[in-house]
Length: 259
Image 1: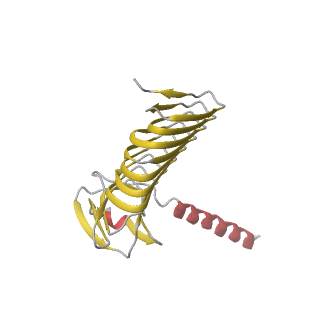
Image 2 (image 1 turned 90 degrees about the vertical axis):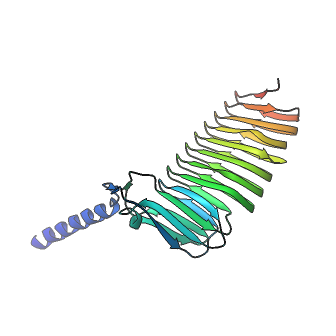
Image 3 (image 1 turned 135 degrees about the vertical axis):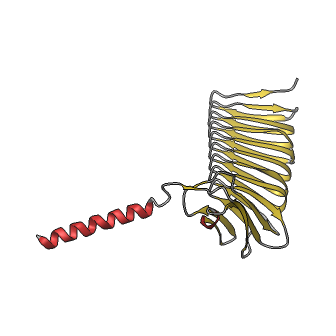
């Protein structure tokens, strides 16, 4: 019986230790108010993933470097690790800063960004053969890109906002947020299965293929050809005078916004 009690106690203590380890990000680590800057060198990468509440800014450069501006007692807990081709930015503790934690990411090439937190990513002046934006948080990703294929995917409540010069543009929205696109692109395909909005009225298209299976709306400008499939309650609003093929089995509509 004594041995059995010892085993039970040891097992209980093991569970407590594992629970504490799993919950190590609680409570918050408060910032000390002393804002400072730290520069880190890294191995090569061409993608950025922001997993926290950081404000991340892409800087085109000839070197790989990360510059962090945050309170001095928080910087040691901000991780910048390269896995494969991706620079991952997160924290080892649950940080509570008094000032925004800003991170400038220097790299010669950028082909994709991902935000899964509530922070932001600024990706301005991107030039790449293909460029992809993924947002699964409540944050904000914005910038401008010259690319052959721009692909954006939003499954959160945040916003993607890009000005484009792209041959092909793809936008997939399954959340409640907004994808806002402007610029020029001969061809685009839009898919909504959520309640959000694809606002691409300022992205000039020749051809557009759109599918709506949720309650969200699409706003687009297209000159030549528009193919629309609606099986949800959302609407597609268009500017221009394209030839239209539509397949509507839901309660949504295709609506001209021409004056």
